[in-house]
Length: 214
Image (cartoon, rainbow, N blue to C red):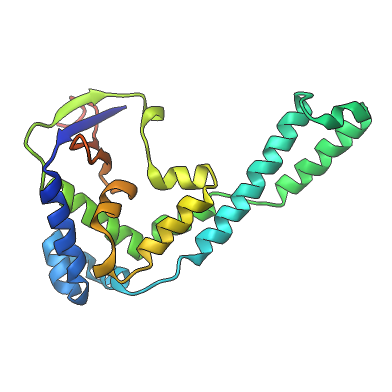
C-alpha cells in the first residue's frame, strides 16, 4: 500500500480546525470554506446535535462477541480448565458457544452506522481541510504495510474499547463549536488523511500507487 507522508504546521492545523468548528451556526459558510457547497444538506445535518449512545451498545455487544470467540479458541486449543471434564463436554460447550456466536448476527453494522452519520462525515471533512491547509510542501511517497497503520476509531470497534468509545462520543456529541480541535486532529480519522503525530508534525494520507494515475 502506498501513502503520502507530509509535515505540517501544528498551530496552523489547530487554528484552521478551530475556525471551521466555530462556523456551525452558518452551514452555508462552512460548506463554502470546505469547498463543498453541493453537500450543504449533509453539512446542515452534521451541525445538528445527535446522540451516539448506540455506539456504547454496539461496543458492549462486540465485547461480548470477542469474549465468546476467546472461549471457543481456548476450548479448541485445550487451554480452558474445562478440558478436564472430558471430550464430550468440551464438544458440547463449543457447540453451545458457536450457537451463541451465531446469534450476534452481522457485526459490520456497528461501524457502518457510525461512519454514515452526517456529524462523522462533517468532522472528517473538517479534519482533512485543517491538514491540507497546513502542509509544508514536502510530501513524499512511501510504501507501507497497511497493517501498521493506526486508525483510532477503527481500533475502538476492533478492540471493543468501551473507554475509548465513551471518550469519542462525549466529544462528538458536543455542539460543533465546542468540539476539541486537538481531539479531532489526533483521535479522529479523515476521508483522505489517515493519522498524524502532533509531536512530530507528520501526517499520513491515502494515495494511489505511483504511476497508477495518468
